[in-house]
Length: 204
Image 1 (cartoon, rainbow, N blue to C red):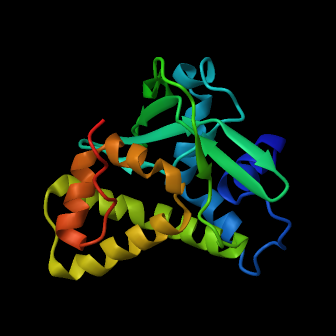
Image 2 (image 1 turned 90 degrees about the vertical axis):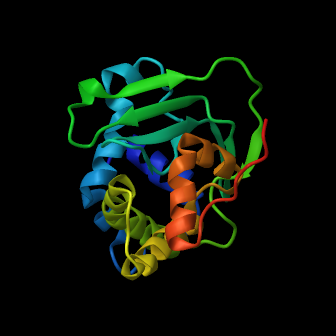
């Protein structure tokens, strides 16, 4: 495991605590997930590597129409027991089935970077974090497929809500409006089909 991976997993995903490794290898399970590996590799693509600082944190992927996903990258400050997320500075779009040469990273222009609070919701242990992260990445392809098809059945409601519960367990709280704006259509579809979703942020 590289130093960069340690930083990404501990500093930005688990808020750098000194907890013991979970009894079940949730970290290994997440790292073995195909969508996770593809999302993690976006920062190494030609479009992103030249503009993206290696220490930036990455959000969870949000499905788009078509076959792509969107993520945000943000600065963070790290202390021994906490990491804070700041205003996202770049957006990346990627198609898991396409080569990395098709990935696109775009930096946001202007604006002042603000501290948006903890990068992980309060009270989430390492074990709970990685368990939820595994559920997010394992369920997201199915959730995205339902979204892109434009339909779902009542039997899908439990899976949609389980996805959102896992997402809410680990998503950076202060970045909720930014997640929503990545694809408002997805979050409104999720609300209509599953009942749980991000709140619509106020107009800027």
